[in-house]
Length: 253
Ligand code: SF4
Ligand code: SF4
Ligand code: SF4
Image 1 (cartoon, rainbow, N blue to C red):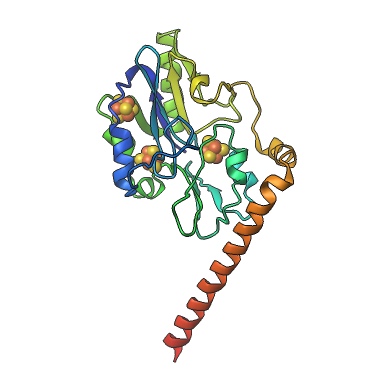
Image 2 (cartoon, rainbow, N blue to C red):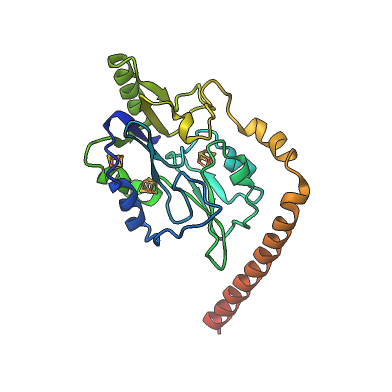
């Protein structure tokens, strides 16, 4: 399984990883919005660098969980955990209900407010690139080796080796953290700072607890959104199928 290891002690905050991601996916410049979270992630920024005190820089992106809560929460199967590691999504299936946003313990998926057919966006671990035998654009661009790509088992062993060498380092993403993640970290700062004060190390995998969490969300809160999104999705799909039918008829005629 493919993974990324980010070593916070090596990051100089140059932003090259962020720019490489934007270039690769042709993501437009960010628009300032009042409702954006301050971590820099958005539908237009799939990875960000969060600056912490004492000039510490923490790269934030989807953790590509081994047992992703977003996947188990999605009612239409728009999110997929691939055998190679990446958690990807299918914009054609997504109906914009935002259950995944509520389920993700790291608060990663972001809604694309500007699209005529809005759906959630996030890092996809450069799935197409890794299928072609390449590494993700972000790890390729990093000038210091602060964020590297490889097999999960090897990166986990490397992370443990670094922690043994430097006891100040903490390891994030092994099996003790919600079943493990494909984006690992070694860090000399507490990563709670980028996860809204939460530390998930020691917590079990989340899919088993996703249903109770979602059950606690007031239905009135999601109801209208889901209804409207569902309507939009249905109309969109019907139009799409109609077009496919028409082009099929033309081809046969
Ligand atoms: S970090 Fe969130 S969005 Fe990414 S795989 Fe895990 S649950 Fe899904
Ligand atoms: S793995 Fe790919 S999609 Fe994810 S942050 Fe890096 S460049 Fe962007
Ligand atoms: S490219 Fe590397 S050093 Fe620069 S901000 Fe990204 S992770 Fe840090």
